[in-house]
Image (cartoon, rainbow, N blue to C red):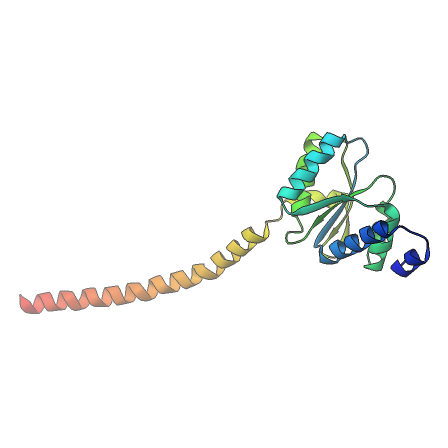
Length: 181
């Protein structure tokens, strides 16, 4: 069902706004995690939302009808099979693995939360992949590793050139000392 079809049906404007917000978030997302939140208390959901907020991850409940529409529109037909029953969605933007780390940690202490399916970097993955995803380095860790890999050889080259110059100056000083003596 497209936005035009929704508008043709008599649907409240706030629901259309919800669809638009969700569409925009999915468009910017690098990681989307569908969860089954059945059995979680309001306190647990609030705790999870706070943890997500601290890590720049959106955690929201969107009607499956709206989720199906937007995800199908974005080309994620394979994830639609996971949109059954109560579904909450965690969305990561800059770090696609951030929601995986949060959800995996939360599942350790709250077994009622179940991961249903994952869209990671544009690919639909089963929930079992969360263990591999959560261990991926953060963007900052990956960048610092890259900088270290680039800087290491440059630093080594600098040290070699510096040692040659230092040794040359040392030899010239020793020759000058011999000539004085």
